[in-house]
Length: 132
Image 1 (cartoon, rainbow, N blue to C red):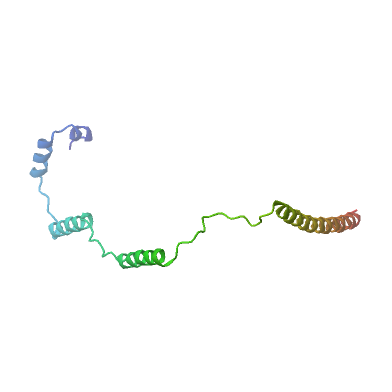
Image 2: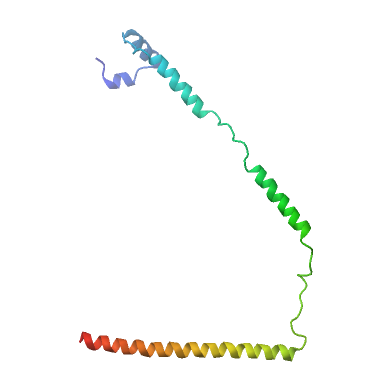
């Protein structure tokens, strides 16, 4: 019996001749299984068939709808900027009125928050008295 180191140092021709000298029985059906495995591997590696493009009709409909929308929608002068007020004094008065409304709403919100803060403070005092 040879050692592993001796076997590893053998040349390919020597390994082949040693393999041919030994009498080894091949299992029945091995050749068929090998052929089947190789055929399955070849099928797996082959390029898969491309599925028909099912999205193509939908893309055509989308393009047609886009073209119809562009053709039907009339061109407007939406890009042209216009002023809402001709008189700057009226515009300023409108801005002041808007800011006053905002201020009134903010004041009401601040008052409500202050009342909520007072209620929260009273609740904290009650809890602290109960804990002590």
